[in-house]
Image (cartoon, rainbow, N blue to C red; front, side, top):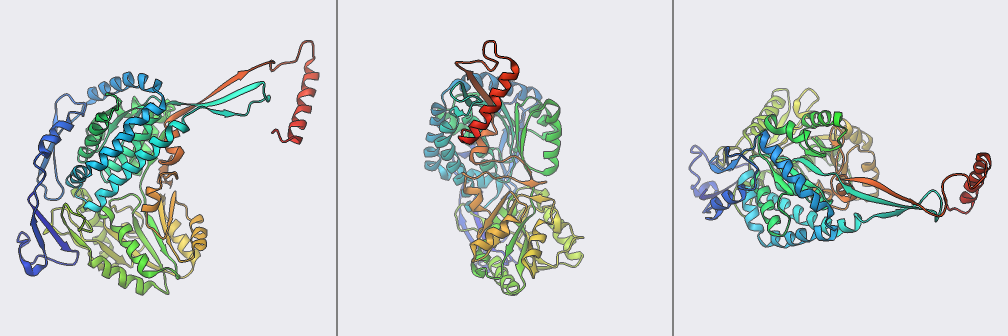
Length: 546
């Protein structure tokens, strides 16, 4: 890849899509070369995959050119990965949590020192703009630091109240699940992959991890770096392959399953683990709504909508796909939103200047195209965008705003997972809440208002795992101290916060009885014993001991 190409979303290269050099088109072209050591590094880090030798070539979405060959795992490789992980986990579980945290603290420092290398890899394998690749890197650094600082304290045994004061000594202990089976998605591969693995490892588990094959290089780079920081070999096993080939064997051997992906796949995983009574966490799809109240700062809301709708070309489970604006400001908002969207820069650049990059897969481009074309055929209006941009790269699609989207259109309720949003006016706040909740999903939502108390009241009525006020998604995503996940068809379980660590543990009650038995004393009858206990309950209530 030798060229840097950037276009405004409303510009076109003219008759010759390949002629990027015409100055009058406003296209900036400069020579940019992939770092010369990258082919070697790809081969080096790919050795972290458990594989018997099969390989698959992956291309960069930017141009469709070959990027790397990665090893592919079979069922026997997954079994070997679990065997090695279980052996490594036995020692790791006995390691003090303070010692477990040390490699992760070193990892944060090296990650920030070598951030340009990881940003390049993320862009090459996903096609996203550098600013959205940086979101991934920052998420990983902050999450690793958050858990490395807190996990040792949270994992200490906690004293609890016993049945008999003084005589019953109770401690609550956290034990690792064992080996966690993890499946992470392609859209934010490093963010979703690493930030789920970190708490699982810190809790004392080993992990057998299947990232998406197309976007596995960034994850492998992080595995390699973390092991250089002191993480013992064998704890983070990586397998690559199609779910149809290795998915079942991966799930069937896990002591816990963590999955991020589609709702359909999540349901299948839940059904698969149920007979073994193995628990799981599932972060699934979303059709997220944004409400712009009549008192909102329109300019601020427009800037927020551009970020929330078009980050990573809309390939983000918490991005906004439905936008409801109060009728009193609807026209002004829509006009300014359209202007800001037209001004976005699309392109292939390894700088922070581009606003939006490429889609990652042809199937996503096809889905986006199909949703938009069907909506237009059934009466929706394209305000901005609405077309693919092969002149920039094979999988580029313009950021698109539509109005007049109705219930018979797939775009209305089905997750598009692309740079497309519908805008609709509302009259009353109750109507806006009803519209926001009119979805089988409940992952994220956004409310814009100058009155934060009003925003919180509205947020409380929205059935979504996260609701951002005066922000689209980034505030909740980056606040690692608060659990994050979905309601309804958007999943079960949470990442982040204590829940994001404790889900990878089993609770064990350690109870010691001292001084007296929980039985009648000496020759005391059971009736007398029962009377004594009853009187004790009344006394403890009066003294507020209980």
